[in-house]
Image (cartoon, rainbow, N blue to C red):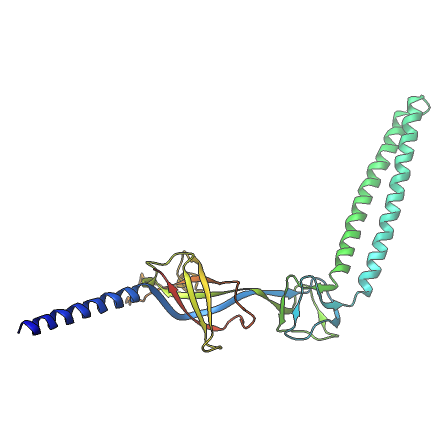
Amino acid sequence: MHKNTKLAVLTIGVLGVIFIISKFLSTSSESSDNAYLKANIIPVAAKVDGFISKINFSDNAQVEQDEILFEIDAKDYTNKQIIAASELQIAEADLSLAEKELRRAKQLKKDDFASEKALDQAANKVNNAVAIVNKARAKAELQQDNLNHTKVRAQTKGVVNNRAVAPGQLVRVGQMLAYLVDDQNFWVEANLKETQLKNLKPGQKVEIKLDAYPGKKFMGRVEGIAKATGADFSILPPENATGNFTKIIRRVPVKIGFDKSQDLALLKSGLSATIKIYTN
């Protein structure tokens, strides 16, 4: 009997320890499979009208910042830039002449060989010449900018995807030509239930698994927790003030960054992920 009591107490003790350990393990991490890889996707747009004369990359190619992706026929823009530059040179020469005449008028007035009216006329000529130079310079700068924009460059290092135009095609200002995926900065956006947020904070270690690569594990850290639920950013947020109410657990976006010490070459924006955040 005494032996049976000891066995019962020991069994209860073991079960208690197992319960405490399992309880600790269950509350020391939060997991979710509502998570996806994200990256900055930058639209590459035309800044001038014209025909595409050349495409300098292969689809899905890696490109460097400022690399020329598209070239728009520059003939008309080159001619306009040359004309504007010539007009600026003429305006500057006229201003130089007007300033020379003003200095001469001032000297003549000082020596009483010119009237106040003549001096005023010379000063007005300088003012008019300055206005013409400023207008010509603005025009020349605009035409130079337009000429520069005939070469469409990569805004950042990344991979060019979803090319939407072909050589010879007419494009307009603002038209999307392709998209540039910044493959230097990936993160995971995990949508956690509001009931999982209690112990979450930035800096916590995260284990990341991708559906596309079974068995491969990445490590990261919590970088930030949104101050609003995903429903608040919806185009049509739920209306709970009228009609029947059904309580739904909300989800809050959590941003998770990857540790830079690992190989991230396999990452692609939009991939599905499963995450485990260690909260202890």
